Amino acid sequence: MVDNTSIRREKNKARDLRQTQWWKQRLAKGTCYYCGKPFRPAELTMDHVVPLSRGGKTTKGNVVPACKSCNTQKQQLVPVEWEAYLKTIQKD
Image (cartoon, rainbow, N blue to C red):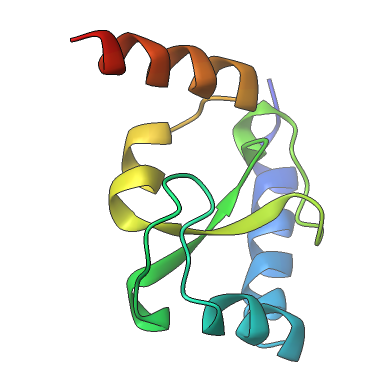
């Protein structure tokens, strides 16, 4: 389990990263990383591919733009768990 101090530190890094030109360019593409659908930049959120609560860090390699729906559904899942989840809902 990750301690609250580490999570708070990473959330502060994320807040700073949202202000960078790099992140603004990612948002400007207007595509959700998970579903691939187009969105207005204001409709996209920052998602940690490996969640902070699971030991993920706020790095350019671990944050992606995601629509609110995908971000909410993904919750605390790591990529392998997310892929398995998608397969279960596609079968229904």
